Structures are given as structure tokens and as C-alpha cells.
Length: 277
Length: 183
Image (cartoon, rainbow over all chains, first blue to last red; front, side, top):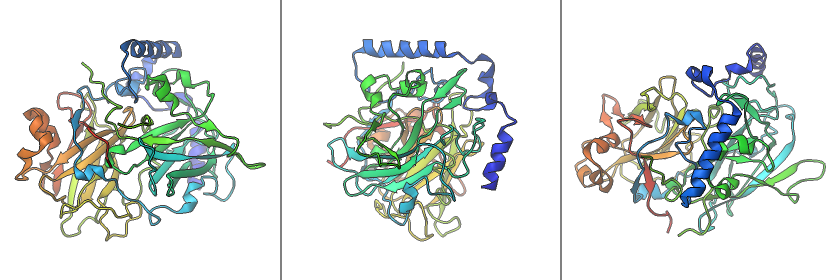
């Protein structure tokens, strides 16, 4: 933890403008939120006009500036999965300790912030559970700071919070984590850019083709309409699938609040069909 | 046809480094073990610049061509070959796995690509050159020669080199799968 504290002290001498989620060459010409919001609205309108359904994010989504040089421009090639791709790697109790599902007990003391439980069921498109499979999460702390060494946001690190967890789903495909609610954090996609509170999820299905990394958001977050990463999913119903539901039955008296978020892994055959010209 | 709509993907973002990489992730077998080979390469963006914040996952058959269904990838015991590994790129955009040669008639490494700036994961295949039945592979046969070349690893002294071009003239062929698994 000494190292973490040292990193925290060092960061106080660094201004918010040193945060890097953008190539430094873009520094002089960052857009403002109004510009980004106008671009988001234009993409939404174009999608509405298209009359086609697209259930995943656009890979070429200029409001998220980092996507400009990192999206394929050629249409993906459709193949029948080989036998290898019809199977997923197997993980077990030798890989994951049950204690890793509780992000609030990884240090000597309790982390600061709102303690929450996040749980849900992982299925395939036919509703069959993804049983005994690995789920990994990572997130910022309650102040919106990642422990990652390249996070220079001058918010405090929490010596009692790392922000990384793992679990295996049970026989019914259910995962469950105890953590704290992450704070929003600033980034340099544009000026005064703030990511909505989110938890990163890494998921495996029963086949290689179902591999998914995504982000879970919280209901009612005012930053969601402003966020180009969330809005890169231009279908409104599709992107709402990333928002957890507050579930009072999961909340525990004098202890924590509860969120439910179910996940469907169907592979990408119908979620990314947007060749760019 | 699937009844439930899929959960959409999102970018891995810039800050997965403390969470997803783990000791031994890129080493499916210990380096130096008899039969060990290296699969390595660079991830490059549309300007030809290295991508230092990408994460590559590898999934492959055993040297005998079998699909492996054994746990132990996250805490390797040094003996169990699980067929799966994970490697983040370094400051030069380079990833490097130590593994065994996959088997089968048309052996390939199945790769998943994640990166900051990449809004959803990408799938591709790195085929081993020189396999006698490579020409009969349905995917390779369907591609024009210059596109086909992006899916074939190049041999070097330790194993194979496979660069991944996210964009540009030499853009790697990325895949979508035509049917749902497990039917």
C-alpha cells in the first residue's frame, strides 16, 4: 500500500489536463461537450433514419475520438465457427478464490463509498445459463480514481480498495459481487468530459464466439446522454441493456444497496454488421 | 434464432492493466520447455503506429488437435496445457505468447483483440504457414490473396510472427461467426 500512497501524493502535483486517454497531439484542439453532443445527436438521427437494427456499438464512432484510427474499415468476414471456436476455455476453483468476489475485503480496512451488491444471471440467447464460467470486473473507487498507474485524475486513491474482482457463475449462471459504487471520472476525449459511473465486465460464454467485454452503468446517471462511449450503441433499447436495475430486495438492512444486471451472450453474428464504405 | 437480444460490448478502456493481465498469462507453457514456440507480433493502428494499450487473448488446440477443456489458465501449475492465454501489448505495441504448436488439419490460433479506442472486441485467426491443407480452408479460400495474407503467421527462429493491423492498407481480416454455438 505504501506504493499506492506514494502514487497518490505524486498525482497532486499534476493537473487534470495531464490525464491521458487521448494522443497528446490532440491536446490543442479538444472539442467541447456541445460539439460532441451534436455529433452524438447526428449519429442517433442517422440510425433512426436507417430503419435497420444494430444491437452493438458502432466501431467507427468519431465522437469517441480514440476510435478514429482503431476501427476496421473493411466489413468483417462471416465464417462458420470451427470446432475450436465452438468451445470456450474452462475456468475452475483452481483459478478463482471465492473471496475474490468481494472487493471490500481485499485490504485491512473498509473502502470508502456506498457498499453495493451487484448480481445477475448470464445466459445465452435461448436463456440457457452460462454455468461455472469466469466473470472479471474492474472499476474506479468511490472518488472516481483507478488504481492504474496511468490514471492521473487528482482524486484520492483509497488504500482499502483495489477495484478488481473475479468470480465463477453458479450452476444457474448467477454471478454476485460485493463492491462500492464507483464515482464518475474525467477524461480527455473532449474538454470537461466525464465518464458516467461504470463497472467493467469481462465475460466468457460456452463458446469462444461469445467472448464479451463491456461496461455496466447505473440507473439515472445524468452523464449517460453526454458520454460518447455509451452512446456509440446507437440503438436506445440496446444501450439500455447496459444499465443495471436497482433492486430493493437485494439491498440489505444497515449494510448495502443492491443492483441487478442480467447478461446475454449470443456471439457477434448479428451485433456488428456495419461495413463502412 | 435467438430469443433474447445480446448484451452490447463496450471498449476495454485504458485502465484494465491492474485487473486483467496476470502472471503467467502469456505463457501457456514455460519458456524453454521442449516444443515451446513463440507467437508474437505487433498491434498497429490506421497510421501504422503501435497500439500500446491492447489486450490479446489466444485460444488453440493441443498439438494433437484436441480442444482442451481443463481449468488452470489463471494460476498455471507449469504442467497443465489449457490452450488459453492472455497478453497485453507493451510500449511498442508488441504481444508475445509462449505456447505449443496447435494441431489439426488446418491449425490456427483463435485470437480476440481488445484495445482502448476499439468499441467492441474483434475476432481473427492466425493460421500456421506450410500446413498442407491450408488451401482447402473455407475462410482462406474465400479471400483474395492480399487479404488472405493477413491471416497467415510468418515463421521466425522461435516460432511465428503475426501482426494485427486494426485499420489501413494491410488491415487484418476480422471475423463474425455465422451461427450460434451449442445448437
